[in-house]
Length: 88
Image (cartoon, rainbow, N blue to C red):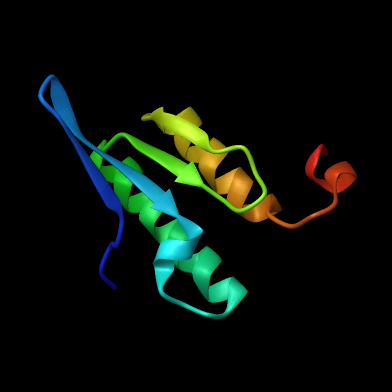
């Protein structure tokens, strides 16, 4: 699966990517979430700074590291759940 994201080149640092649910090119919700999760893991594994954009959610800003990876995966896991479930 190809990684389709927006690369932002910065003269002062490494490339950064924006991961977006709409960019997966898939129709099925679970398939889109699965692909985006794989992209999160790939970016985190490479140490590439990334942001995450999800419909109806506050975007995660560009960052790196284990805590950012976990926050992105949590956001994907909770996407679409009622607020009281996502707070648990």
